[in-house]
Image (cartoon, rainbow, N blue to C red; front, side):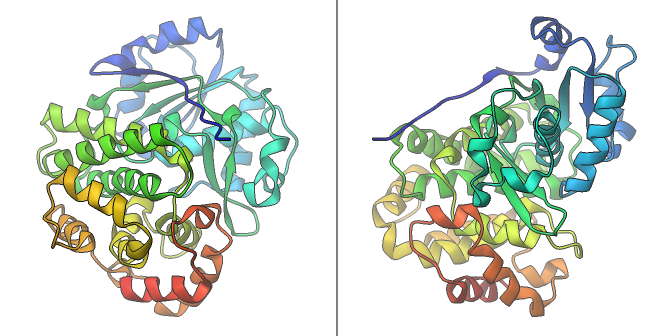
Length: 373
């Protein structure tokens, strides 16, 4: 038997962020904590999106990779301000941090007990604080996803997954992505594309997720170059945001080796590595590794993207990286080769490892990391 569950309410379209005050009233949130990051405050995006909402408590110290320490700091502000819900305005890190705060607002610490690898899903109840997610990037899909990725106090990056972590509402306004620097737009876009690819290849049975993933992949690949090189292209930004949303919907089917490795690498304290950029760099090596287990799905991808049958998919995505200006090697990010063996071992403990279509050992992961280096 397969259990297939969708999803949360989504408001999608240009100007949809203006519906935030009415949404707060409908959800009976009288004093929400706004979770964001300092860059969005400086850029004026927070003021733009919260116009008309007076005296809103703001936590703007979200790190690039959300940590248990930052979750604790936001939770203290949530309680001190007597908040009754949360608004997450930002990229995947902001939304993931807000999900963890929504959990700990009603559940006991520490976060580790709720991690998937520790059997934590059953410990997460429906009694989580309500959350509205407003993505300002097109990549993570966290606004419609059941997972949050947090670097725990012991330094490991772990996933907490539960339908009770879904935001009550996602407001997806493509206009909020217009000010993204090209490198960030490119990295986030590759995150969305990797979600769609890996969800499609996951061995779990979920045909609706496969259909959504394939549609998202086509939208993402078709739009990413225009969205990166021409921020004023409204159609491209909307298509990439939809690809991101669809990736978030689809990856309930599971992800794979790309994310197992990028989660491990994302826990490093130095250098700080962008998750989507990592996914883009790792994708070609993983596609080569999985090829023998995924021939039918690779044929579907080639047909959907118009890739000739004699063209390797890994080359297709490597060339895409070059066209959108992303690095093609881990070494280009300043990563020390000496950490690769530990990253390979850590990947075998990640929840995405379990749904890679071809079984991988630590030795296999080291091979893929080395190939990507």
